[in-house]
Amino acid sequence: MTESDRETLLNKAKRYSSIKYGLTILEVAYQLILLFMFLGSGLSKTLVLLIFRFTANNFLVSGLYLCIVFVAYYLLNLPLIFYHSYTLEHRFCLSNQTIKDWVSDQIKAGIISYVIAVFLVEAFYYILKHYIHTWWLFISLFWIFFSLIFARLIPVIIIPLFFKYKKLSDGVLRKLIMKLADKMKVKILDCFEIDFSKKTLKANAAFVGWGATRRVILADTLKDKYSYDEIEVILAHEFAHYKLRHLLKLVLVNSSTIVLVFYIIFITSDKFLNLFGFSSLWDIAALPVILIYFVIFGIIMQPAEFYISRRLEKNADILALKITGLKDAFISMMEKLSFQNLADRKPKTLIKFFFFDHPPIDERITMARNL
Image (cartoon, rainbow, N blue to C red):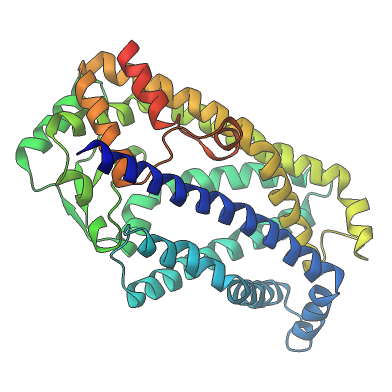
């Protein structure tokens, strides 16, 4: 790659990243505006009253309310969703996905999200009804437990809905990965590859699931374009997270955040509810109040969570390099990833603070060179 080509790609990555930052901010602001308008206009109350004309069953009322709100929100947000996930990716030559496949994925993701939302919301109201003073704790524990179970199911149920799954066909690479896992004392079911290239040109690899579903997944966009050494150091990084108990630490951080948010809702929601004419969280029409809490606290807590995540990612990089000794492969892999995924290699401090859960590429390369 010539210096001119490199500079062109760096500028392209900057433009791409800047647009994504702006879209993320716009989407969050738009979401809050819609929620406040939905509550303030009385539409949420009106919708519940209309549903009660058809049924008085609380389970059906909640399900119908969520269905209507889901569809309405999606339609109102469709231009942003389409531009962010389809138009922008094609504009920067990062996607191979057809409109038909994009629509199919959107429908599948919507159905999954709706089913999960109904399950969690119904559990929320059941616990709220039966544990008046301690509901915030029991709901938090239930959500945490559900998250862990869902993480176990992702590799065997969710991923196959969006990608074709098959065992890694490269026997040499598979042996290399299994040997690395054994060296790092990580138990895995097997190694798999997915047809990432059908949707995107970006590269990725993951170590997903837990227990009997724990497995390595390689995108074909990575498997076919990276050397064995580069793939080894990528997976050494993923295994390092397990070795250093990072997943447990992240679960504890996320669990603490969930408990904190629900406790704050418990002690402050009465005044917030009064602003919109609600007397209790038990009213399904007040559900957007809960969503507003989570959006606002997500904005507040995210920088701290990202800071912790960046520290853990750095430690995983260090351990991966110490175990493999593949410093040159790590650097070349980072260079390839940055151009293939159009990553912002050196973001401004404020951007890094709010948007980066991994250290920026240039920081990771510098760390490797100095190790």
